[in-house]
Length: 561
Image (cartoon, rainbow, N blue to C red; front, side):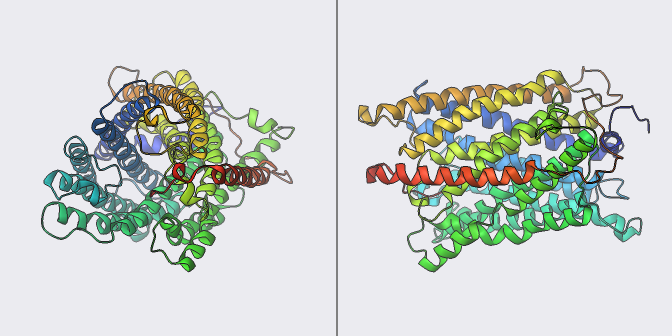
């Protein structure tokens, strides 16, 4: 292995491990990432069309408008996020497990990927015909069972089965060296990948529990499910937080690639932190059910209390990463409160993606705590507050992080240099600017009672003028965000296709802060960030109570998540 001065050895290790995987493994991962980028492209286009309709830029028949809305949610939330997670899970298991030379149970992984792709085709076909069901697909929207609705549910079932297979292959990859006696301990990344795979398996089972009764009803093989919403809420909770677990693990990996820095607290502490996802995520699903009319009051109280713990794992990983970076940077001469931040390799597409993702997570995380409070959920859950805050997480945090990771993974898999890395390094700023406009307008619109799932909120001219102004701003922000994402995807797809120079060595900007003792260096930014988050969360909550309580009853929310 050759090592280029100025590039952390960890960067070479990660990309070289990918490049030396068997050809069949690299083909599997390449197909998985190609499917992910296709799902993202479709989802962005459908989302841009929906935002344009909501803003009044284009006129859409409500039937086709809701079809676009359904296609957007299904493509992005179910398929882009989970194709990407499937690929990253297998990538990390294969490259960060000592003694692993290939993806174990490769045939099972191929079966899983084939099932997921088949599910994507069926789900898209289901959204293009019949009644638009929205991404949560409640059976009562379909009115009567029909094969088209069944096709929609069957797609989700195939997705769940495929994820289970992929997760099984990832666990087998991490376990194989231990069974072979070539390794006796997992790295922190391998441990986290196994925990992540376990939660993916749980989500796959939850998907079958939620959608199998609905599919049987749609095909005429059984009665309409009587408790569909409960199964959906349990599934949605896991699918909501699994991408965040994947995101912080990607940060953990990329920080070492970008800077050579590992956790100053050691691998064992990192394993404990990642294990907290298994402790805190599954029991906290109760807050998704706050709007269920038959939910007992004691359950509501327990759900409110549990919801306070949902961010604990993500905040802990964030603190580990930031403290490790800050202490190493100070040991290398950084001065001032934020001086170390300026030393990071901001010319690298992965670094700018992570930086903007952290800002988006702060905004989305603070706003999410407003929504999960038992007193505010009934007021906000059916307003535009939900898409306003949620895009900070799905686009600004998770999607940008995954795209940043693919800037390393895809070139290593196909052996070609990354397309225009300088341009790709600037696109996260463009995406975040559009997201800030979209999200801010959406959250304010939610506070003012703008409905969440109505394409036309003018109410024949009776709606407040500020509603239309906010929707126009939302549409403009959505357009900017979509353009930035599509350019990013184009760059990655162009890297996948032949024609670019062969990759000899990763030349993306980086720093090397490894191999130095951090001594008594102190880290301030992590704790200050958490304090700031709590203050902002409290401010958003107070504002929400004051504004929402002053609105007429008919303009406040009353629907489900």
